[in-house]
Image (tube, rainbow, N blue to C red):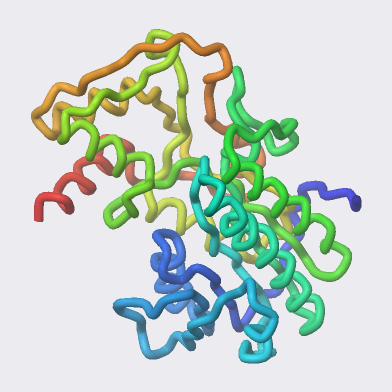
Length: 305
């Protein structure tokens, strides 16, 4: 497999960007900011967006199907591949679907990118691709994915690395983004729902683990925009803030007005997922505007409206 280091060369600003998963939490925010920055945006998803600016060329397509790629335009400089199915522990019926969407679709999209000779391919990965660790997760940390979703994203990373001879490649390993409008399977949404329904929340190792890095959606998008034109390989993206699940639940409980119910379990495998940010700080003028307390207030206000 080709080497995949971290460089600081600057690329020419791309004109046209294809964003997959444009209906998703990250994709919907990113597309609007790309337009604001002057990019031409092409959006792909399996369902029509509720609200989409007329300036975005939208294609309702299934990236796992071969005939999909006949419909996509060829005037693309950069692809940002966000589309994925997040199911950490799918049952037998859904197992193939998760693999097909997260791995096979990624391979087909990479082949399409090679054929049309794009300049850059950006892949959205996750902390789950590496798994729990005692210490901060670095870009070169050995991968031991915690769940099937993380396993498929790790395969996606390796597929992207393989194509680095054909075009510039970049892997954005995103750690626990949050904000208003997340889906029900997002961490913060699930915790809020469990607290409101007075369901027990499992806390490992007396509350010490897991400790997670978090980043508010606006700050994530700001960093992604800064990295589009940089020549970095794998890079962790999150804020410097990190909290245990116990701390997050306590903060949410105070805002909701319900004391969370906990079930304490000892499990040495359940460690932490927080990021080392050396490369991020080296390649961007890193700073975040919304701290976690502020972000939680925004999320709760949005839920109460």
